Length: 448
Image 1 (cartoon, rainbow, N blue to C red):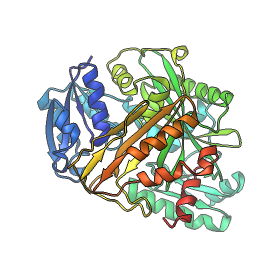
Image 2 (image 1 turned 90 degrees about the vertical axis):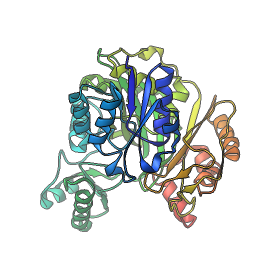
Image 3 (image 1 turned 90 degrees about the horizontal axis):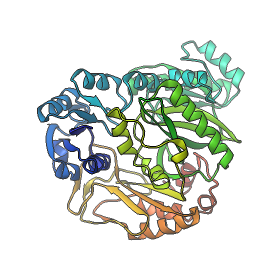
Image 4 (image 1 turned 45 degrees about the vertical axis):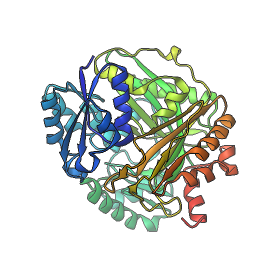
């Protein structure tokens, strides 16, 4: 097992990784920008190293600074967390070249799954259902129109690299294809440095279902059930739950098995997530996230498996600590992402937290680095806390979530807590009858 792990991230996920390491007897090194000098993960880590000024490109994306910090502190492994360098194949290679272990997948999987065209073709070859569309990047407009005519409108034009909703445009009819292609290419070029795009059939009312998997170096692979991530605004998730209220047991068993077979077929090691759109009883692969997910606590709550611990163990060359038959799914769990944003306009709300009180009690978990007096910097993602609640049934989980949101106090800034408190009382959400467009319609109707 590793002696010392450098955590190349910040915020609640850095704190989560630190806690898993300490429970495993592993020393930790926190790296931080000047803006994060007083962050909780920096305070709790065994050692800390400042790696640059506030801008991410000068700190959390500064590979040379991170590797230097790992070298001078004697770290034998680096955990990249989520975002930043977590899916950067070049960084993973550099970590290896410096004689340390990258706690994540092999660079070749980071590279192949990071290109959506390659990922889609790989999944198709492995027997995973994919969205009808082009077989690869489309460079010729006439070819794009021919493919769109074949799969039928509406058509989604998507950037081959990147994500987060950038480089995505919908053409509802043939006359809109020219503009959709040009706008998607321009966005993709500006955001990801590549204007490669591909086409997919646009699904009107899908759910967003993702399947959690773990594979090791010994040929073992398991799935840990699915999460429903359909409550999204502008392709950004706000609430996740598991299991999905939209799936039957037969459907979740089927898609779980497909994910396991693909994981084993790729020779994939580490944690990963297969993301699907689900409509009219059919699954369509959209991408694979080759890292820990923000919403991983949902899976931990319903399986009892510590995903960060397993990720570290696998990276150290150990086999999985369990088999598929050992996985027992219990009850229901929901995660609310608490962002430092206005709950109506979603404008960022950095600043000083004047009062902080996290809810607690049976089956209530809060992942956050906040504390009273902490000043949230304006330079990074607005996620400041995750509230995870579980129950024996979905109804019990919702009642407990309502109580926990009532207890949650974050003063001095605006947060999305009031929005979550509203959403869980909406009839469509209570019944589980929502799709990936539902939240945006709700927000628009409220004037957000």
